Image (cartoon, rainbow, N blue to C red; front, side):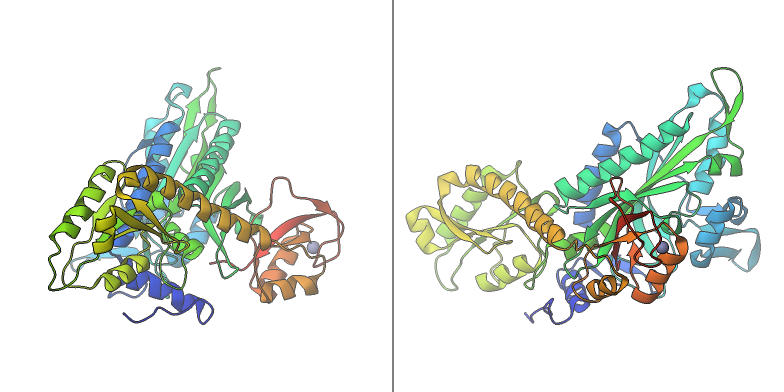
Length: 474
Ligand SMILES: [Zn+2]
């Protein structure tokens, strides 16, 4: 097997090598599109399952709204259409007949959902509506970055309707908390959480909240957002309800989403120069048992031992016995390392004699001989250790890459050097934000709730300023 590109040589090629060689995704015939292969899709399915459970536990139901949205719907919310129009694809013709009204392939579903909410909401008794949908989205892209930026991607979008502003805002904050828990506990990926600046918020939102992760190259990645939409969509679609006092009021809204770009974030958070590294909770297979078979020898005892070792793990742990006889054990080791399986169990003739196996960790490479009888106890403990270890390592990396600077020159140097979240004072002005973005390609990733107050803005020198993280982002 050819080696994958090293991170230090070419980070973006390293990422592409892992995604394609681990058979997670491939380029589609249409530019901008990708094919998600079974190994990548299995990771997405595990993400979906965990998130879906968390959505249900917070009172949400799944529904499904159509892919095709009348173009006039998008035009009803002025900021929304302005934000999305450049990347919208539109169906204008069926067969050789032009459509009476062009239909947009959904870039997000606020408009069609609020057109329906108008039919379903009359009184305060109809509220709240707490809906989520799992769907595909089309936002036209000319450059493909597998999982990170593609024309079509998969996501979930929550859309909720409430009687009061406080409830809608609380919902947006609650779901950001759900995303944060998921990122940290499942993806082993620590994040910063906060509110987006006016320039960076969702088109049509009053406020956008975000979680931001740090990739190994010092770039940030927006991993999930939730929006307090105020009454913007209710007004655009005339959705009013009768309150308890009998008066008509516009409905308050939130929306929130995460997408398959989380798979890309997962790859870039933990993987190394040997390939993918997966946190056990999201690994399609947590354990692979590899019997070390010799060609020409009687391998029956080894194969039987391998199956016996795997059996008691089944049910509690996702385990696979790789008994292929057409490839060497070394080839299998490389393949499962490339695919990021957290624990490999090796069992050869000597191990059979000694009644043991060798446990090999994917994240550290550490090898430990273990009596066969202890495998059912030792493996689950080891998996938990790996999950925790990945988070702790990523957290230490995040904490080591949050430099503080107080001058424009040092902001620039930090961004052009190691990157990371570079904390600098900002006055809150859009012009200062835009200047940094233009000159350094870095954006304000979020405004922390507990942002430190400080003297002068790093750009204009005016105060009062708050210390916010700047970063280049995927
Ligand atoms: Zn300023």
